Image (cartoon, rainbow, N blue to C red; front, side, top):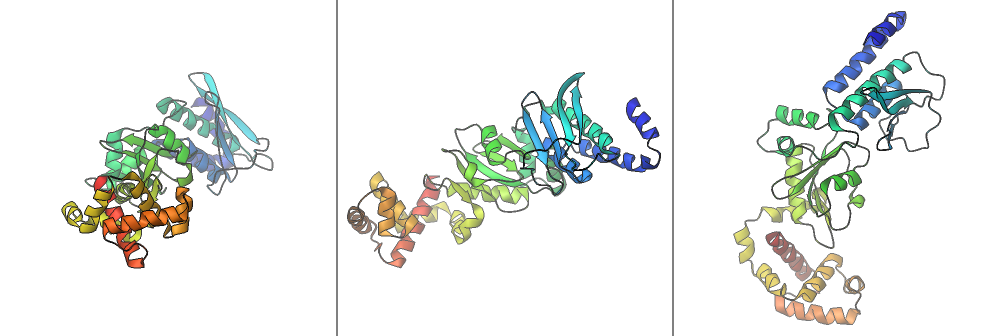
Length: 344
């Protein structure tokens, strides 16, 4: 602090700008933002790519002034400051300004280094994505008011104004690994609740979910509503479609609102339940419903189309549905989906 005061006393005309830099980082530290948020905010403040490196984990975070991750190979840093914790150098922060350093760059990096050390001290160098389940429940629960939800999200490391995507997950893969894969280098938190895992992230890449994971992705902006949507979408996942966006369900989402008793009493659903005793029949019907085409279903099943045709004829007789007609295909799709919702 004495060094900071000495530097400020020497800035003269730049003292006002220096105080703004100090206040900027004080605000970030009060909000308990994470390392990606620190790098993103610093890049925006400096008008230059900002980077953070932690030696213990070899983790490097770089953001551009526009708020996006810096993907190009880094040029030589224009200014670098070490990150020190308990008198030990644990990493570095830097700016990648194309021209000469600006007067406040070193001060900005000093404050960034202090903020990074604070984050590392609080969470550890290999900061896990796992979070306190009680805090996550406050962020997504129906019983939380907006102020409580906003505070919980801030404590989880999501800065005000950042979008938060909510994902419901069933997986044997550890949740922290799943979270790190689908949202690399950006704020992400995960927790295991009573019956399902939850991931909160600023972005979600559906293509990065590992094999064996079922995931439903909410669409709403509010975390509580997005969580309800994510749980609903999770119910629609299958082996063939392990990741489902709630927004992509459209009117199909209404099936999740139908009372269980009414679904069980439906003749088409009851017929599907009987068909489930023959796994080959169910797989054939699933492939046909998914593609809407006899030949594409045969390709999916690695069977000759004549074999699939014979199976579908038998399945149609069992269900009492003419599967080759558009109305029959719609009935079969709805019945199969409704039965899966019952099965969980």
